[in-house]
Image (cartoon, rainbow, N blue to C red; front, side, top):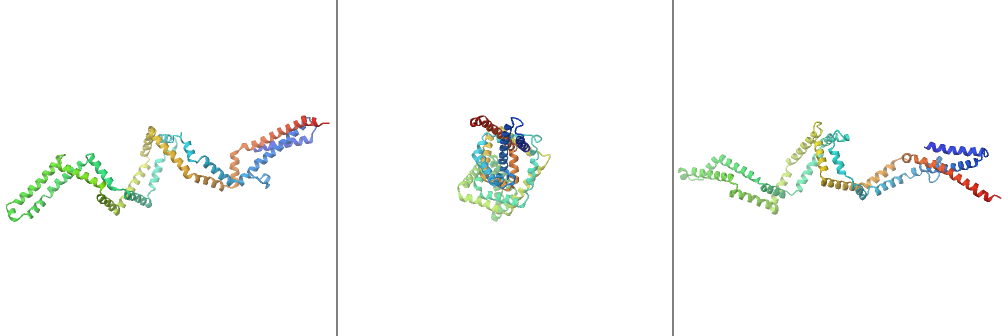
Length: 405
């Protein structure tokens, strides 16, 4: 297009020269001369205007030329500010995303089979596996330990224990614990029977021992305890069971309301956190979880992550309330990113343009505008010639007859 515009201008120059050399070769020569002369003026003027945008015409230091190279820094800042004011405002971003079903797009992508659609999904599990496997640095383990320790330290353990015990009692699962305790008591009485008999014998004088009273008392004591434990085991409403449940409920009440009871539990927590074994336990737990997750994700025959992603996509797609919530959260997140990082994006654009050399800026803008620049020159040549022809017609038909003697 640049060559065509230049050849058209050259053609007007040739036509003008021909009209000068043979002015009377034809009656239309004056009209052609007027057209060619004005076309050259229009073409040259527009050539100068187009060229002055990007470079110095003919290399001459004419003021207010090479505008884009000279003003590229201001151009970059203006472009960046325009982007921020018109595209990166939170309200603008939120308004543009009002009708966008981002959650639906994510759900459909998650539900797509691994073999269809973009190939990037197929490598997602191994990629995550490599990332997880790379978290074996000791500093990461220390960060996990510090995080776990900090969360435990800030957490009040007393209400948690009280809620857990109340839930246990409300579900009747404490009965199994009482039964286990009774069984342990029965076994302990049997195992410790000789020791009990020995203690009774030691505390009985020689006369009662001679009469065998010590043996009778120890047998009565042992059998009474065993009978009590058996009754507790077989009677869900036994008074001892009721008292045990009442004691448990009183203890949970104390954990919620009495500082001294809370202090004992919190002290146990502090002792646990101060134990060096706690650090090793958290580190070992993290290493085991990380290794297991990485191995599962990198297994080419495993499809656990893929199945989980399909299930997640199905859940999102089939739950309008969940989808609406995700869309709202994503809109807020994107708007928040625009609000938080809008200035950074502006700085990125302006710094990038500022870092370009003048020739790069000129080429990029000129290529972006493209053919339209040369159409300016072509139109200037043709329209200039048409105007020149019109002026010649006015002069020939209106002005000359009026001024003629």
